[in-house]
Amino acid sequence: MIKHKYYVIKGLLILYFLTLWLFSFCLFSSCHKKEMGKTTLSINGRPLSVEIARTKNQRQRGLMYRDELAINQGMLFIFQNDKILSFWMKDTKIPLSIAFIDKNGKVTDIFDMEPYSLIPITSNSKCRYALEVNQGFFKESGLLVGDRIDLETVR
Image 1 (cartoon, helix red, strand yellow):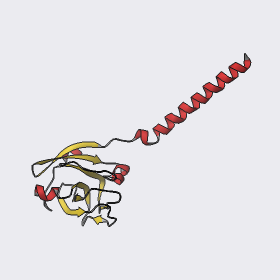
Image 2 (tube, one colour):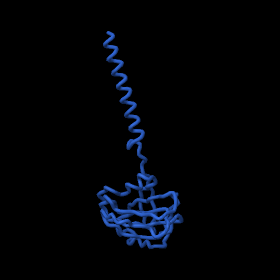
Image 3 (cartoon, one colour):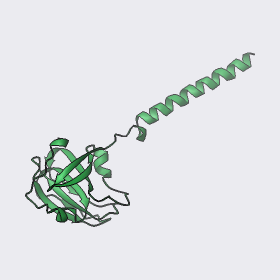
């Protein structure tokens, strides 16, 4: 009887510590990922559904490892401060265009980016935002350097 209680208590302790370990793992790892927000922007009257990358991890991952990006979709990268921004296409399969945008929503630069390129694409002035879309979207939308994008929904 004493030996049986020993095994029951030992089993309960093991179960307790496994549960505690699993809870800790989920709390401090990918189980606790922040989901990206989404919103719709208007690019010269053309709706663009964007995922919002606010955290460092979200911005670092960006659109990497994706096989496609639907038409009229993109990703808006938001930074807390104005700074010179630099992006590359490491592990990114989709040809993209990027617009660098200042804190007032003014487009300062537009560049095309090639899949898997490790060449940095850098803004020419300090910016708060970067918007990645399928290559050619900005041209088709008529978006030019100097145009403004309303970013009130994400500020």
